[in-house]
Amino acid sequence: MHWTNNEYEQEIHSDKEALVSAKEPVSTVKAHDPYFALRFRDFRLFLIASFVGSLGTQMVYIAIGWELYERSDSALVLGGVGLAQVLPVILLSLPAGHIADRFHRQTILVLSQALAVLTSLWLAWLSYTHSSIALVYACLALGGVAMAFNGPAAESILAHTVPEEAYTNASTWASSSWQLASVVGPTLGGFAIAVFRSATPVYALNTLAGLIITYLLIQLRVRQRPVHQSEPQTTLSSLAEGLRFLSKTQVILAAITLDLFAVLFGGATTLLPIYAQDILHVGPTGLGWLRAAPSIGALVIAFILTRRPPFKKAGRTLLLAVAGFGAATIIFGISRSFWLSLAMLFVLGGLDNISVVIRNTLLLVRTPDAMRGRVSAVNALFVTASNELGGFESGLAAQFLGPVVTVAGGGVGTILVVILVALLWPEMRRLGTLIEPKS
Image (cartoon, rainbow, N blue to C red; front, side, top):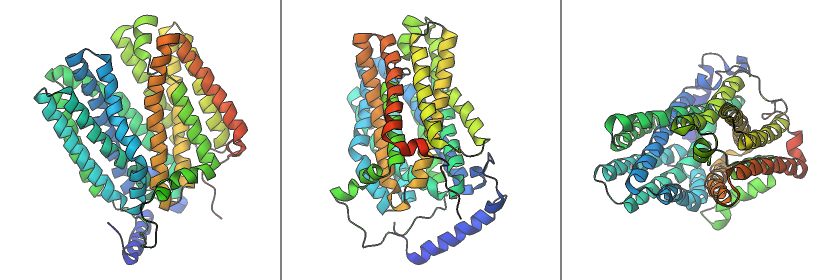
């Protein structure tokens, strides 16, 4: 869907009117207002849609794991779930980012969400009929296709729902909604399986959630710059433009590098079942608390961030947060106390959320709108790959070195990466406010 220049100008005018008609004029809203981003209708709709989507996804993760393990009694089958979902993301992220920059992002979001609804409906049918695991993998791969196209468009469209002054606040709220869904979703999924004694209703509920999300996305009134015919067509060069932009934008590259290696080395969450059973001896109930602790910590930090003024020394804050993440990982790795381990996971999750908010705000502020899709695609590619590869790396290392050495060593590696990033990219050490004041 392309917009004409007249349509684009009309939409800009309507956006200005929407900003003026907010509860307070934009010019009078203070930067530390915790509800700044929530004053804008489109962001509220987008946030609700994101929360419902994350909630459904977390419920499905629990259902898939429970059902496949019950049917196969194989850890290898469980490992195939992540692989089936991540392969389409790795293969399609760059083309999806290019498409998000060439076509109307709201349309891409709606279409990818429609594909996700069909995928969830198919999962419900496969579960009800006890179809082969191979077909379940195929269905998950189709869901990965929807994820690949949804990610760049969703991250890009966020910038159109709020003014630039609200980017940090919007990133904090968006991260908070995901963390809240990470706490509530698995609980609801497990409860639904226990009540219905089947995973099928979970997939059906996710289908309903997908329809709600689609409706909310259609209601958005967002603008996007018109695409001119003189812009480059799809080529390998244009697909790689996001990579070239990141290589020239040192601050964003440094932030993504920190996140990439922190996830690769920080294997605490991947090895939680081993810690719960063999090291801390707390059983499945304790495992549930250990899994929830990082998200609870992230929610607490998000609550604090929304009530504080914007970062004044964002670069130093990011470096210290990731270093603290590494230190908390080391303490968790060597701890034999359940309560100390729980506290470290709480701290670990909170510090990670600081990193997420700063990185996402940098992507919003420092990336030109014409390239947001491609840059978001590269970021999503790195994040997804690091999550899956980090889990694989932790499992492989633990097989030979043991979980304690693996987790504690990963924390040490994270701190070393922080030191290297601080030395290689002095721009990160000097980074002040994320959003420069306008003259």
